[in-house]
Image (cartoon, helix red, strand yellow):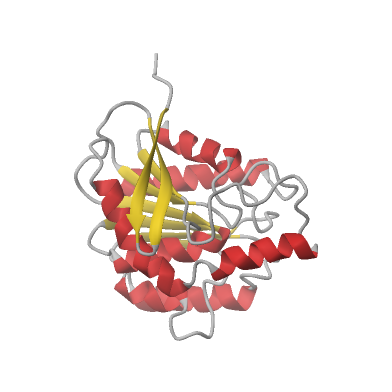
Length: 248
């Protein structure tokens, strides 16, 4: 009988303070490592369950509170309503607490924190990001290119911007395989942005996949929200597991 997933909580000294982190493993290991970056709503039972499911497949999954500059989760409770002023103040605060430059400061620290754990086997790691942190997964793959064998973004937003440090501008620095799973009718990643991303990926010449999930809206992978799409959420797991199996 397979053991239950083990949960270990600890702290990481990050670029601008200390962040809480959770490590999930299916046993004592060692196992290949995966960095799991949460969406804008932060660490909570819904995505902790997702990380545990990945760990069950034979991985050591590290989930840091990437929003440590803002505070400790939970960041939003049952009273949260998208568009309502008090709720949007929280979201805007979370956005502001993690710029692209800050992501790139923290990324190598998280990579090393994962690789230094005794539960993690030697060799390269993977990274996955959701919504807001799809960009962080891509940045991590570029900033820590020698250590990252694979990176995935699911319903990643703002992957292509006009800023000089737009996430897609980091693609040439990536050495591992990249995977992008896009939502439909996503205002944070509209068709023209997907097209520009795909053009950059083609020019890069590395291994990648970039696809739109039919009928799946922004945020479809995470249970507990009205846009959760169970069928396409299952497909996202299979794509992620295939990517990790190929590379780790």
